[in-house]
Image (cartoon, rainbow, N blue to C red; front, top):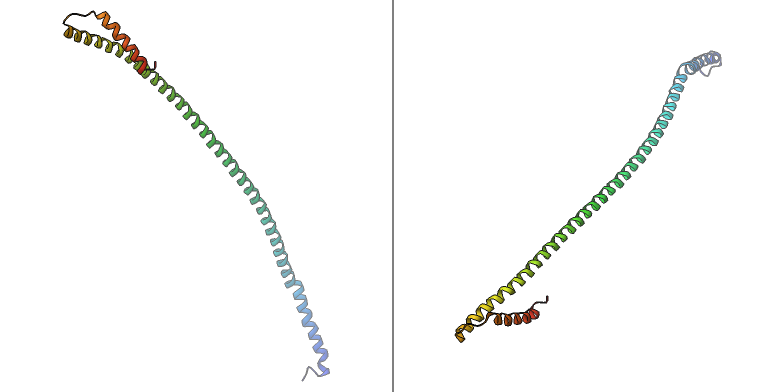
Amino acid sequence: MPQLDPEFWISQIFWLVLTFGVLFIILSKFILPGISKNLENRKSQIVENIETADNQRLESEKLNEEYEKVILESKLKAKSIVNDAKKKLIDDINKKRDYLENEIDKEIKSAENEIMILIDNSSAKVNQIAIDTSSDLLKQLIGAEVNKSNISAIVEELSRKRKDKYYDI
């Protein structure tokens, strides 16, 4: 076995040093700088991505706060619009109710006045009918003309008594 023979050890050490030396030079000058450069690029890209993510997170938080603020303002504005509309509707309803109540009161007073006029006129007409009927009955019973002024006084006296009894005027 030549590896164990001391005569070949020097040449083996030479080739070992030469091979590992060349390998070390190639690795240290060409391959390791590329790997180191890639690691630095990756590290800088990761740091940059983290910074970008933090910036975007902060920006999204700001936008979210603005969004919440806009939503709150919109809710408050909508609530005030609804309250204003509700107040306006209540005011309109109250105005219309007051107007209708006034109109109804006017109609009631007008109807009461008409009823009073009818009551006053009807009692006069009833009295006249009573006078005429009484004078005709007395004329047929007695056979002579009776003084209408006496009959009208009696009828008016009776109607006043009954009017007080039936109408609380």
